[in-house]
Structures are given as structure tokens and as C-alpha cells.
Image (tube, rainbow, N blue to C red; front, side, top):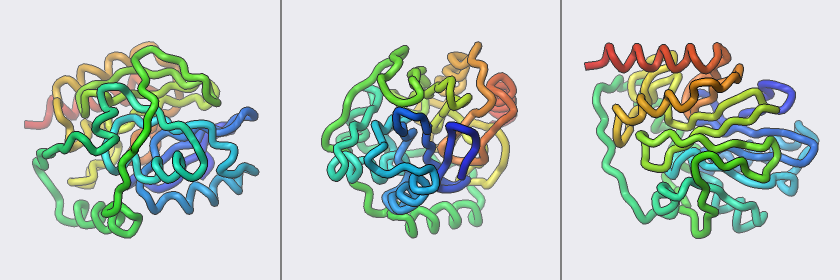
Amino acid sequence: MKLGPHLHRIGNDIVAVYLIDTDEGVTLIDAGLAGHYGELVSELATMGKSLGDVRGVILTHGDTDHIGFAERLRREQHVPIYVHAADAARARGEVKTKPSWGKVNIGAVTRFFWYASTHGGLRTTYLTDVIEIHEGQVLDLPGAPRIIGLPGHSPGSVAVYSEIADAVFVGDGLTTRHVLTGKQGPQPAPFTDEPQEAIASLRRLDGINATWVLPGHGTPWNGGVAEAVRQVEAAARSTP
């Protein structure tokens, strides 16, 4: 799915992966579920590209629904995988989490787990080798992606800003479709380690002038960064 001249998405509003497309090659933001690998190959073909054009994968954090095909791409295509140092152990499967569920809608939960189960979500392969990144780095990858720390959802959650893509990729720093309730619009993401820290971290996006705010779950948001953050903060205040 093409979102802009240098921006594509695979997956859907349940789980998404993004591609920054440049003349120098392709940078992936997250790796979704294992079953998205075929969609990646197909989307690259529509762009006139192939797996050999992928220069790197940046993980917004180390959760299983974001690392899906990363190890396969690293092993088979020798693509480097980048993750914040604080989430490296999580991406390697060395840290297990016990998420808090909160309020759920059975229909939304069923759709999420059905989609995950049909796209390899039950057979996650953890990373065996990662390149650790840090706040403020601009990586030598297509799209000159800049790393912005967004701790809260996990200790090493990050946002990734690319000027050429006109986008900031926020992972689970926020969501526009709550996978447990089905509620739409910018709001706090579920399964967050430190909810208050996660909301406070969004202020690190102040000053970023990007049309697109792209979460790992939900509809791509093109209403600007400031409005997305405002709506998340409002939703957080209204949640008991």
C-alpha cells in the first residue's frame, strides 16, 4: 500500500510494517508477524525493488508482533536489524513480559488473535544478532532515519523520524486502533509497561513537522504530530 512518494505499508490496521523507499534502497520500520514476509516480497515488487534492496530493519521495540520476519531477513538476506539497547534482550527473547489487559471487547480481541494466528504470530523467531541503537542517532540507512526515545511501552521503545518519508513511526508509543477494544483514533496503546511514562514520552515528538504519524496498530494518521499527541493525552485523562 503506497502512502506517499517514499512511503509504503504492508499488513493492515491490526498489525502494520512500513517501508521507506529511496533511490539508495529501502528501510523497514518493524517486521510485523512472520507471515508478512510474503507481503513484503510482493510490495517490494510493486515498487520495482527486491529483498536485495532492503538495507536495514529498525524495530520500534522488541515485542513479538513487531519482530516477526526480522530474523529470517537477517539470516537469509544478511539484513542488519536495529533495536534500542534497552530492548535488545526483549528482541532476543531473553525478557518475558506479563501484560496487563484492562478493558476488552471480545470481538476486537478475537479479530486480533485470529489475524495473528493466521499470519505466523504463534511461531515468532527471536533475534540472534542485533545492532543496538540509541536516542538521537541518525542511522546510515535510506531515508536518514532519526531515533527518538519513547520509553514507556517498553524501556527501549523508540520513534523513527524520516524527513523524506514525511513521517514519524511511533510503534506502540500510541495507537489509532486499540487491539483489545476496537476503539479508533489516537489513544494510549495497550500492553504498556509504564503507561504514565509512555504518555510523557510523547512530548519528545514536539517540534517534528511530519504529516504522517504511523503506529504499529491502527489507521495511518495524517493529521499531524501535535494533534495526534493532543488526542492521546486527552484519551489518557479520560481513562480511569
